[in-house]
Image (cartoon, rainbow, N blue to C red; front, side, top):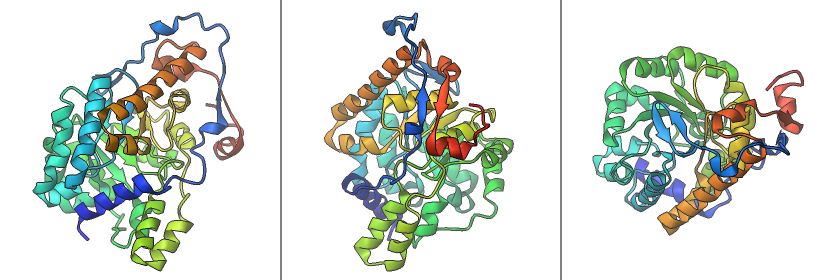
Length: 352
């Protein structure tokens, strides 16, 4: 199966099947302290955020989702138009298909065409770095005039997927080479299994400019591969998808783990409401991103995407008001209580 065909298959499964993790991203175990006397006016709250010297109107990204097949072009168009309208950032899905087949480039170029002023980041898998090299990375950036590039880590999916590449040795050196060679910021992005503090420290030492935790609790790519296996009668991959469906570090835990490493942290994985965004900021994230909740709206059209994102932004603003915070940077000082699985995983003596 071609990379392009696999991309549209993934998208259709995400649109039609229940692919979310069975376990929580951890936000239910995070409690923000209510401020009964905020001493700010809600209308005066400023949601604007800076990322790599680029101004965003809210600390929110449309996380990497799709591209690489003709049928994804209109979806990326709707997502990009929404990002431009709302003044937020957007990432494209893996550009591997377009690097392998230039015919697929249009499905990615549409993002920059429709969002000329937005923060847009490119996307390539760490396992493709050995194959495509620095030239491939630069091509992915040039393809969409990207402001940054995400190198995604998806070894859980690669291990479950029969076509997957599990050659992980040398990846850190390849990441460092990219960081040293290219001029735009490098974001390391997990895709549903989270990043630990130990890994974050190693990545920052290698030169990465931001960490997208991509924690568990949102889309399960092992679950996506389960449905692919089910469709083709692959009993082993079906079994592996089930067993590893909920593998990983919950997003809330991963945000805490990665905060304090000296680079911006982006919270993705199960971010579904503005309250989730507020909790992410309080835990140490600079921004949050969401993807799966936008798949169905994007298939409907740009207005549906704008409505869904506007609702999240409105929720965030109210949460900040009720915490007495006038801007996203203030959220990091909000008192946070953790309980349940999140507290157990972080350890009783960990200070947030």
